[in-house]
Image (cartoon, rainbow, N blue to C red; front, side):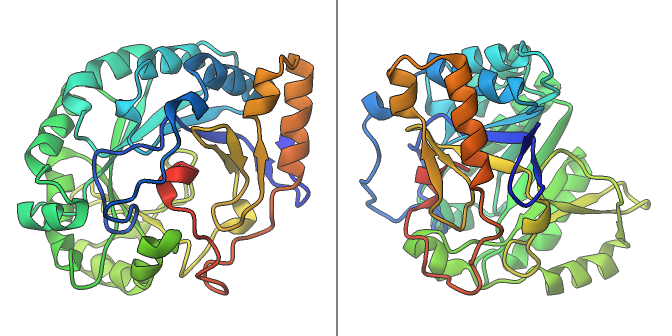
Length: 324
């Protein structure tokens, strides 16, 4: 198993397959942003699969495919199928904005992707257009319906509450998730780049108190998936709420994940600059043993915690370049 210098087991790899996205969410990418990598600098599908295989050899059981928007990357379903065949892999999930999901949902499910997280910050069309820069709500809802039809084991709806923008939509989002049997994940905006820094001021703790009272929510002891969310459940209507609170109640002491960017940088913490470049190593013809050793040494350098609260302007790279 991969273990860092603080005794945490790292058994979860998030793989960004592209830094490109077809939306410009206000908390993620600045309008007019052009700092994307050129495709020749992305890891190939074969290189991504090789890194995944190395992590599987080292005890990683959970993998998540992310972006940018991962469904923009050709060969994604081939990569998912490769990972699903690796010994010891228990779970493959994917995070998407849903715009391309209608075309790809069934192929993803057939390739071994078990769970989806779909970003949806409102059910109001004008609000979605404001947040994403695109009038995309109809196609996102079509993608969600296609995902239901494809039979994924679990669908989570990711919502980032933004003060004065979509925080009035919480009750409608809960009702939507109850109606369709989805889990609602509420996520605090993180100060990643200038856009994230402009929004990372909403604590979810008062939101939780309000939703607990309205929907009779009780904490769940078990986790759902391998991520950092804490969960509450209502026995009255079956609704499950997840909270990801890197700002108001961080989870660094139990962090079990690292992120591979599309360009091959292994990011060891979202809120620090520590990373291990893997692309040149892969392209130099390294052996599997050399790759495994490099990954082990990198994980040993995983920082103890982020500094989002203490130093909110520290991380200037945008989320899409890091990997979701």
